[in-house]
Amino acid sequence: MPHHPPQAPPPSERTEQRRRAILDAASALFLEKGYAATTLADVVARSGGSLATVYSLFGSKRGLFEVILREHANPIIESITLADGSTDPESRLLAIGRRYLQQILDPRYVAWWRAMCAEAPHIPELRDILLSKEGGPVMQSLTAYLKAQSKTGALDIADTERAAGQFFELVRGRLYRRALVGDTGRPRPAEIDEQVRSAVHVFLHGYAGHPGRARQRRSPRRLS
Image 1 (tube, rainbow, N blue to C red):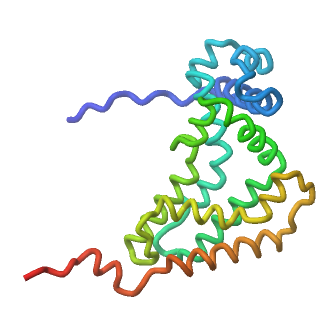
Image 2: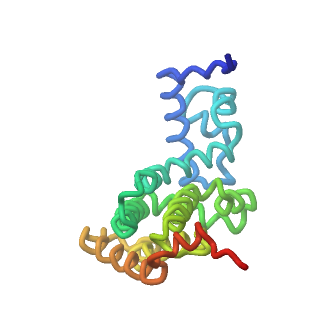
Image 3: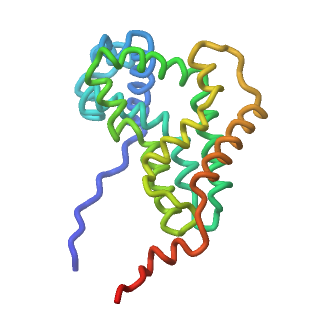
C-alpha cells in the first residue's frame, strides 16, 4: 500500500486568533506608516505575541504583506472559481465584474491601495511584490477562467493574461478613478451595474467565440 505522510493538523483556535490579530495590525500599520517604515517589531507591539510567532506564521514582512494582498483578493477569486461549464461567459463575467468593482470601491481598500502605490516607486521590494504573480492572484484566477472558456470555444482569446488585464481595466473605469482621487461620494448600485455591463459588452464584443472554433482546435486538419 502507498505510504501517505501524515497531514499537518489544522491550526488551533488560538493560533488562528493570533494570526488574525497580526494581519489586522499589519494592515493598519502599512496604511498608517507605509510599507518601508513598518517593522515586524511594530506589528508585534500592536498585535501582541512575539516575533517568533510572526516568523513562524508568515516568514517575513514580505510574506505578511502577500497574505494581506491575498485576503483583499479572496472575495473576487471566489466569484471566479465558482464558474463552471454550464454558466455562460456573459453571466459569469457580470458576476465577477460586480464583485470586483464593489470590492475595489470600498473606502478602506481604496485608501490602502492608494498608499501602497504611492510608496511603490521608491521601494523596490514593494514594487516587486505588487508586480509579481504573488501580487496578482485575481489576475491569475481570471486568466485561468478565460483560458478554460477559450478551450471550449465560448471565447476566442489568444493571450488570456492580456485579456484578463483588459477586462479589469474596463471594469474599473471612471468610478475607480473617482475614488482614487478622493471623491467621497459612494456610487449607487445602478451606477456600478451600468459600468460593469458596459465593460462586459465591450469585452465580449472583442473576444466572443465562434461556432466550431473549439472543434477546429481539437481536430486540426490533416495535411496530405
